[in-house]
Amino acid sequence: MPDSYSKEPIVLREKLARFTEHWAPRTIAAMNDHEFKVVKLQGEFTWHDHQETDETFLVLDGEMEIQMRDRTVTLREGEMFVIPKGVEHCPRATLECHVLVIEREGTVNTGDPGFKRETPGDFWVYAHD
Image (tube, rainbow, N blue to C red; front, side):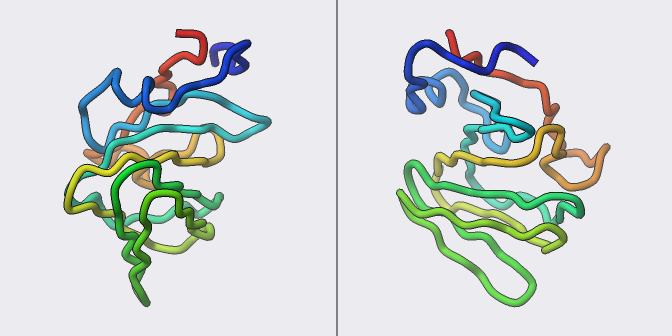
């Protein structure tokens, strides 16, 4: 893991401007045993859960939905939602949406290692770039 502390503020829109891929989270900082990741969402992801950890979504720009088996939560810019560990969910966004995801270090974004949409957990957009 790179040095996760920056001497300057981390500008989220600058980090998001460095990539175009959807559903490919980029780690921008770490705190204790958690990582802060920016991600661009568009379309529907996959149903999955995280058995060992909660997952937090904070919408920076746009709108997204988090489908769960018993309901769907809509999040808009400036809104946040915590998915409790073990809750099956499927994020989706009709139009591109920018999100900050906070989750335990090493969390596989699909819940299950080896799934076709899994993103490597060590892909950083360095804090000092």
